[in-house]
Length: 192
Image (cartoon, rainbow, N blue to C red; front, side):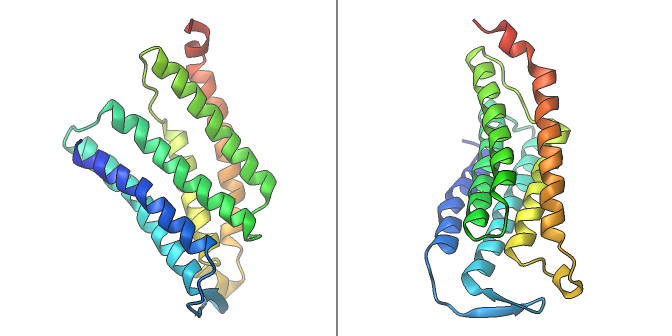
């Protein structure tokens, strides 16, 4: 397994730690961030989410620069992103920080695209993420990070940055899903 794939795998291994930080009631106190009280465990989860998300850029950059792009990486990288973001979004619903209907639409799109990728893989074709899908991922990561960190530093101005970027992520998620299916529908027609 090459280095970019190992970095992707490390992102997957960080997900349970992230979930534990937000799910298990740690009493480590709280921090004042942006004029708001933020539990230390939520702050730590937000930082861990940002670190894990950053590995997405690192592994992609490294794979392209050193010509280490593999079919395993093309499959694992978007899967790792989906697992990380879906975990965060579900936990944000549980925490009352994201509307359930928005998260259901986002996750439904991810299941649909993953299903299309599996059909394509069964036919010997690997479907890589497109540019709009990458923008979708960035917006999802930015919105989750902002929501976990209570909109810091925008909270000083009372600007709901996390909520706005979440709705932008929803729009791009739906549009990119439509675009992905439109460009790759031949896989469904051609499958046996």
